[in-house]
Amino acid sequence: MRIVFAGTPEAAVEPLRAVAALANGSAQVDGSVLAITREDAPVGRRRVLTPSPVAQIATELGLPVVKTNRFTQEVTARLVGLAPDLGIVVAFGAIIPDEVLSIPRLGWVNLHFSMLPKWRGAAPAQRSIAAGDPPSISLVRVVAELDAGPVYRQRVIDLGPDITGSAALTALAQAGAADLATLVAQLADGTAPTPTPQVGEPSYAHKLSREDGRIDWTKPVTKVYDLVRAMTTEPGAWTMDGAEPIKILAAGPASRIARLDEDKDGQPGRVVVESGAVFVQCRDGFLPVNTVQPAGKKSMTASAWLLGKRGRVVLG
Image (cartoon, rainbow, N blue to C red; front, side, top):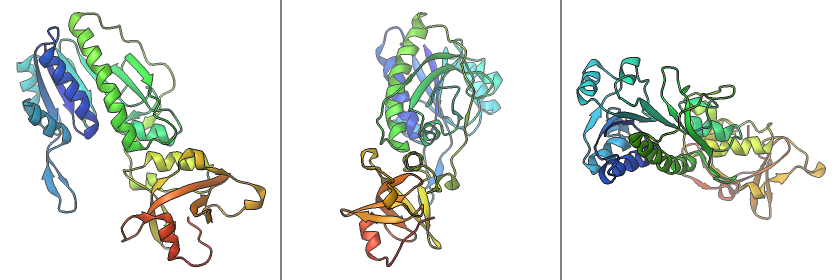
């Protein structure tokens, strides 16, 4: 079985590893895997050109790699010559054109990190958490419309009330890798379930920007905590301390969120200390804040940050 795997970030590494192991160690899926990933990109302050996580693991596994930011005529011609049986895409970062979708005999399968049709698009895991939705995975057949294909399988993954966006991606990738390997084996031997149309109203998970991490302390405390968790570690949750931004690197856990009593009523964004712990007031409660990073400084505990402050502190 010849497989084409298109993916780029860290979240695609475990699925690629699972597919490669299956192709190498299963009689029913025995065959080859070609990895397609985006071109090397500048990373870090020095902007050093660095292969994508998928390129790195594919090289480690001894798989052939094609680096491209889009499906050019040259790449398409190579796929036609390869005549793959199956295409797999996990967060590749570019649309697969119709002429490429039709190349594999069994079509393309997408591992997506949400309960489709909710959160179609670039940042489904983070948008799900920010909206208070449970982390989920979907395996769908790829069609021309973005993340709109029929569903082979989808399920909620219980990651607890304190999971962050980055940790959720890691956990969902691991769970999705196992489900993907099962589906690939089923497709190989003809026992795969017939995919069914998506049900429900679509929503869209647009690419995250820095502004998405801006905290609004006037919202309910659970909504604020959901946002902080979703934006950790990228693009980061932040607020304003006077004229300077400050990042909220760690908050919670949910079990320590304090509900707002009448005698504690005050201004949203107000910072208070109770039993040595730092809390910030939201609309209906107080969010425990553990680690912060003021502008131009290293990360520190919230209590260490407050030592240098005088008087009433209100974030906004």
